[in-house]
Amino acid sequence: MLTIKVIEEQREDVIRRLAIKGFQAGAIIEKIMDADNRRKKIQVQTDQIQAELNLKAKEIGSLMKSGAQAAAEAVKQSVSALKERAGTLLDEQEATVRQLKEWLVLLPNLPHHSVPAGKTAADNVVVRSGGEMPILPPNALPHWELAKKYDLIDFEVGVKLTGAGFPVYKGKGAKLQRALISFFLDEATAAGYREILPPLIVNEDSGFGTGNLPDKEGQMYHVTVDNFYLIPTAEVPVTNIYRDAILNASDFPVKMTAYTPCFRREAGSYGKDVRGLNRLHQFDKVEIVRLEHPDRSYEALEEMVRYVELLVQKLELPYRIVKLCGGDMSFTSALTYDFEVFSAAQKMWLEVSSVSNFESFQANRLKLRYRDETTKKMALAHTLNGSALALPRIVAALLENGQTSDDIRLPKALHPYMGYESISA
Image (cartoon, rainbow, N blue to C red):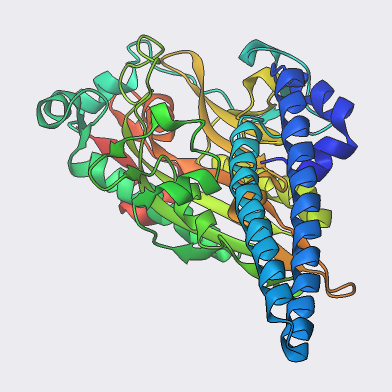
C-alpha cells in the first residue's frame, strides 16, 4: 500500500508511474487527497476542542475551590456540549479514515524506474538465457503422455477424487516430487535461508498484509465458515510472520524458505495451456522470502535472481530470464523477473519462477518496520520473494527434455535424491 506522504509529495510522478502498469490513478488520487484533507481538518478541530476542554477542566477546579458552585455547573454544561461535539468529530474521523483506506488499497505498487513499458507478455524483455536445447527422439511425447507411459502421474484419478487440476503422483512420479522438494530446500538452506514450515490456511489479515486481498480474492480458495483462505503461495504466511514487527537495522537480511502445497482457483484461465501439469489448482512449491533494508533491496533482488538461475542450471534445463513490463506485473510488485524453461516436446516456454521486489508496499500493509541505528527513527522495511522453484512445469520440462527412446534421463543434481540416473518403464 502506498503511503499518503508519497502520494502527496510525488502526486504527478505517482500518476505517471502507475500508468506504466496500465492503471489510471488520477480520479482515485483526487479522492484520496480530498479524504486526507478532511481528516486533517477534523484533527485540527479535535485538537482545538481538547485544548478547550483542558482549559475548562482547570476553570471548573478553580471555581469549585472558590465556592462558585453555580458558575462551575454552567461551565460543566459547556463541557458536555464540547464532549458531544468531540464525539461527533471522532465518528467523522473514523469514517474518513476508513474511506481513505478503501481508496488507498485500490492503488497498485509503483513500478521501478527500470520497468519497461508495455501491456502484455509480448512486451517483456529477455535479460539473458542459458542452457542447451535438447535433441529429442523422433517419437518424442509431451509430458502428460510420458507420465502415463511410465506410470508417474494419474490425471484421471485426480479428476475422480477432486476435479481437473488436482493430479495424483504415483511411484517414481511421487518420488520425483519429493526429490525436487528436498533438493530445493537443501539448496536454500545452504544459501542461508532459514527453513519455515507454515500453516496452509491463513486469515484475512494475512491475505491483506501481502496484497493478496482484496486484489486476488477471486483466485483464492475461501473457507467461508471460518473466513480463512487456502494459501496461493508460501509467501503469504511466511512474510506475515513479521506482521506488526519492529526490527533493528542490524537484523537485516532476514532470509526464509518454505515448502508448501499451493492452492489457486485459476479463474478465467480455462483453455490457456491447461494440458497436463501446465496449469494446476494444487501444486508444490519452494519459496524464498527476504526482508531487507531499503538501501540493499535491489542488490538482494539480483542475488535472488542469480540464486534461482543456479537452480535451473543445476537441473540442466534451457532457460531465459525475463524482466516484466508494466502491464504484465502483479499488483504488489515494483520489479519482477520471470524464469522460463523450454518444454521441448510442447515447443513452448513455461514460467517456473517469479522473483520480485515489493519495496515498502507490503511492509506498509504489514506494519513491518525497522529502527534506524543512528537516528533511532522508524521506517518501513522492504520485502522480496521468489519461487525457488515451482514444481509442476519443472517436472514437465524434466520429463520432456530428458526423454530418450528407452527412458527419461534425470539431471545429475537429482541422482542422490532419486537413487538412480533415469526413469524406465
